[in-house]
Image (cartoon, rainbow, N blue to C red; front, top):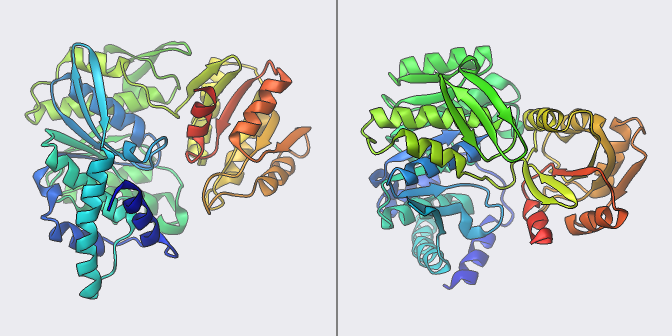
Length: 436
C-alpha cells in the first residue's frame, strides 16, 4: 500500500467503532511485531493537561544534550506524520524530523498483514490508534533512538501506549475532569487511571496534585517501590512575564522559556525535575546549559501561541475546565482588564458548558464554529448555549462555517480587540494556515 492507501485503511479500521479501552489487541499486535517497545528506553507521560508542553521541553533538552530522541504524540495538530518524530540537536539548534510517508506506508502495510492474522485467528481487531502506537514503537526502534518520549492518548492504565514493561521514567502532569465517560466521574477515579502507567521500581515525577489524588499517588508508588519526586508550587517563583518570554525560579535557579502562558512555569518545572532524575539514572550528557537552552528554544504551537499581531490572535488548545481556568488566568495576567473576541469550537462530549462559564465574562464578541469530526458540536447549538450562559450580555454572537470565515469577519471589522481561538485542538491548524 502507498501512503494514501494506508490512511484509507486506518479510516476503514475505525469505521463504526467507538473507543475500546483494553490492552489485549494492541499487546497481541505488538507481540506479533516483535515487541519493539521492549527495545526502547521510554519516558512515559500521562495527565489531563500539559503533556505536550512537558514532552516538548524534555525532548529539546535531551536533543541539545546529544541524545537522539524519538517522540510519539496524539493528536497531531498540523500533519498526520507529526505524531511520530525524531529529534536531534547541535550548535545550530534543534531539528524535528517527522516520520516520512514512505515509512508510514511500509509500517502500516507490514502491520496490516499481522492484523489480518489476528482477524483469522478470532482476535479483536486493533483500532487505528493501537496500530499507530505499534508503528510508533517500531519506527523509533528502526531509527535506533537513544530515548523515546511517549504521551498517553487517554487515561493511562488501558491506553495503547501502556504496553511498555519497564520505562526509564513515568511523568504525571496535572489531573482534572476529562473523558469522564471512559475514566470515571470522580477526580480520584481519573487519577487512578492515570497512575496505571506507574511500573515497579520505575521513578515517577509528578506535579503536586489534589490532596486525595496525591495521597493515592504516594500509595501506588509505595506499593510498586517507585521513587516519587513531587514538583511543588512552593519551589516555583515567577520572575518576569512578557508575551514573548516567561522567566521563573525553580529550586533557586532562574530559567527562561519563550513560550507564553502562566501555566508554562509548572510544565517547565516538571521537565527540569524529570531531566534531573534522568541525569541520576545514567543520562550523564544532560547539563545545565542544555536545560536552559532547551527551555528557551521550545515552542509548542497551539498553547497560548500568538499567531498574528495584526490582527492580534492567540490560539490555545483549552478544551476542558482546568485548561480554561489557566487560559483565563494567563489572559488576565498579560492583558489585565481587557475584553476579547472569541472563536470557539467544542466537542459535544466535553464539559464545554463549564468552559463557557469560565471564559465568557471576558468576551465582547463570540464567533462559534463546529469542531472537526463527528464529535464536533453544531455551531448554532453552541451559539445558543453562549447566549444562555452569558444571560444575553454578549450582544454579538455569530455562527460561522469555519475558522477562516470567523477570522475574515474579524479582519473586516477592524476590531481593536485581541482574538482568542480555543475550545478544541481539532481546528487550530486552520488558524496557522490562514496567517501562513
